[in-house]
Length: 77
Image (cartoon, rainbow, N blue to C red):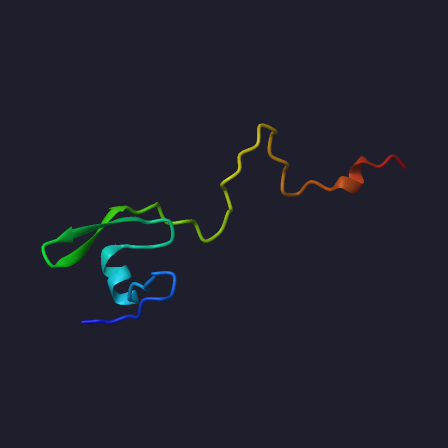
């Protein structure tokens, strides 16, 4: 069993082992329910994981430029 301390703002840190087990990450929505003599926390929504890189996220309407394109070839002699 993990214990944590309540801050002056009433905040607590959810232990990492529980966050991993429950899939809780930044942006997750949780609810607190008072049940008899204790409080239960339930995960309501967990956002999709954010991609590590942004490669491929943007799409262009322009045709792709060939890899072997040399802009110097556009210069008139």
